[in-house]
Length: 578
Image 1 (cartoon, rainbow, N blue to C red):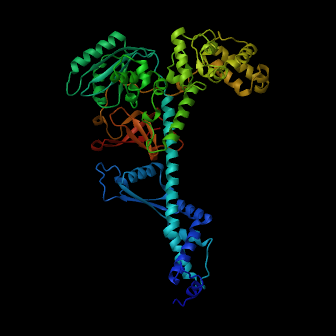
Image 2 (image 1 turned 120 degrees about the vertical axis):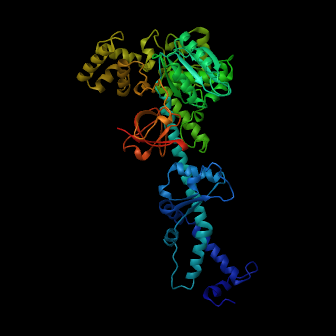
Image 3 (image 1 turned 30 degrees about the vertical axis):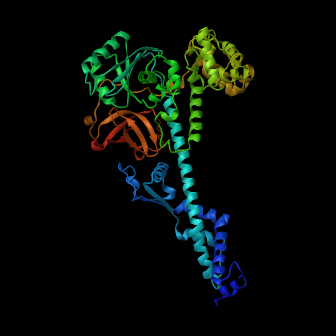
């Protein structure tokens, strides 16, 4: 018999299901614990405290090996929740998923006690106070803290994934906006050892001229024969640029090309990110484009075309295979797919598409045009020849008034019957453009300088609102028309720096601390940017080296300094140069 006050009270609740005082008190504690744990404000305040001052711990699972020590950084790792970075969260999630790491969130006792006592407080003079304190601790340890830990982990993961998707999207956008290298006859090389280097020559418009395979490296080592074949191709086709894929045997192939062009100043080379080339090679689109070409040679064609027009070639590949971003395979794939598709469509519509040269893959991303309609446009072009004006689009089967309204402004017709078809002015705004030119006193036959002069004079003497009313459009449309009349069909990629072309190879052994180099940003991640400085291994410009206010993106050309070289680990640390 329990003579305490709680015991005496508990006697009133005994029955066949609860035969003892001990069971009655235990049941009561469970009810109190569940009440505390289920309290929305208690949960909310505990979660807030956990996000502010909770700690994340990780340790190596002793039962599982990590042969490459990929997660060595996280074997004994502790960090405050509000200081952990997205890439660390995703690394912990991956390590935990592979059973290599054990991860937990620790919420300081004072924090969960403050949260509970803010809403539940027993009288310290009451006989039930110790009973309540037991129930409170049980509520925290058995119910509340595990739930909050799951909630915090889920929140951190969702936040990190959203961030990673944003990083991927930003990198993809910058990559798609890389400037095309026009008027170049390109030799694409898909490097390899045992299977040889696949080569493909394309003309200035991307038309495939010739393909082949050479075996300059191990195990065949037919270097002299390979150089003879490459010289023949350079002379025969007037090659001006050689694009080398950055995969296996890339640097060995670079040395071969440097040797080839040593006495040919008109030929340059660059290393191209070949990520996704093999995916394209085996795709149905590649089979349609090159039905008689061996799948192994299609990758060399893709590499060559990527430097001529990165956007037109990269839209043929699943964005997740392009090789930019961070932990893209660990994030929500549906959300990633939607975001990347949105980026591709935005870039395609911003740049515009030459309807007489665009592939169906590129046309698919134009507003108002889906896969089926894109195929019909290409079929119509193949059967009837090039489009001479935008209105001719209406003859394509399935392209109705609504689709025409959506897509016409994004499609370009170079040197067509109507000069306005070569720019971004929508056909419905042609009357307004004509009226504006009449008021300003120039025609499309006048030079760019003359048009700019006339429009500047017109704007100086007129308010934009009044001018828009005269020509019959809104002010934003008027501003767009003015820009297009001065720079018709302007490609926004022209504002980006061109890639660095090289004529000689640079090895890691050539680098010394303090050396200053020009490099190309290849990938932007949370902890910095990876920069191609012309050697096999990209250098890392850590975020602490990047001045505040500087926002780098893939494709940027920057000046860097070699801070540290770790040859055995293949690491190069870079510093920023103004």
